Length: 363
Ligand SMILES: Cc1cc2nc3c(=O)[nH]c(=O)nc-3n(C[C@H](O)[C@H](O)[C@H](O)COP(=O)(O)O)c2cc1C
Ligand code: SF4
Ligand code: SF4
Image (cartoon, rainbow, N blue to C red; front, top):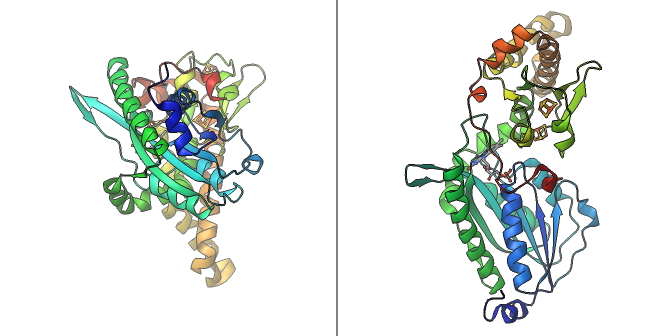
């Protein structure tokens, strides 16, 4: 049903079209985008919904009478890398209007809703959009069920439903404001925390993403179906082994949690005990020790910070890749696999994906 005066509102807003771009691991941001798409249709606004990273940024055409919306999850208190990259590669917007919606990981204890923390995500997006020549009309951080099951169990289906209902109302109220031609900027407290937590966000973008990619593994329940690899939008998984193929996580993984959420065997784990070993193998102290060993042959030059830092970074990535390769071979021994499976929290944590969203909606 078209709400009273809705089509007039679309006309008065002056927009002819809505282009939505969403990135989503487990369907939360997809759902946010679908709510807006449905509302825009009620307002007789022609709407396209585009998936990041499948959409090529340079193919996006910029029109003054089109409204552009960017919807994404929070990753490590900031905007996720694939969306940052996508926006940076867009053509100049020449004053076109844009808004951004960032999903946080919310939860519920008893009857109390506990918000997530978007940190710098909203305003980093606003800044990037501004730099690309958009006129930014608003940003919104909205709590959806937390999906980072590496760190905590997902909320129960009942709690998730409560969180999603609240999020729908908040998302649509925000969109209505934008359509009325008003600006809507909130989340200043989140931004304050975001500045304090910026070292974590930066560390995540530089190394954390790669480290976390290398802690995923498939437990003994994996049947080698390859669905996880096919469902990944980033090429984050390669199936390895001819007789019994098993997933192998690459540095392309963006930690979106989709593979873990949709594996039919619930076979994907994030190895917590393995993470401790991997941390030690790749830690700075080991690379400093190795640099010290090199020093007698190369002279002091190797200790120069301009050389030592890139060397340490290269060591970190190479050592994690090598350790993970060895780990993947050892995991084929059922007993070793079982030991790592039973020493990770994810083995008992509940998985999560947005209840109405199928993996194919996200591809
Ligand atoms: C790697 C990773 C990091 C996350 N970091 C945060 C965070 O810093 N703050 C937060 O509120 N939620 C965080 N979350 C939770 C998600 O942002 C949130 O559940 C979001 O709604 C997921 O949306 P999606 O299903 O569209 O990917 C994180 C999730 C992942 C997978
Ligand atoms: S981890 Fe799950 S989805 Fe991936 S191959 Fe194994 S059973 Fe299939
Ligand atoms: S490998 Fe899994 S967690 Fe990583 S990006 Fe692909 S689907 Fe997401």
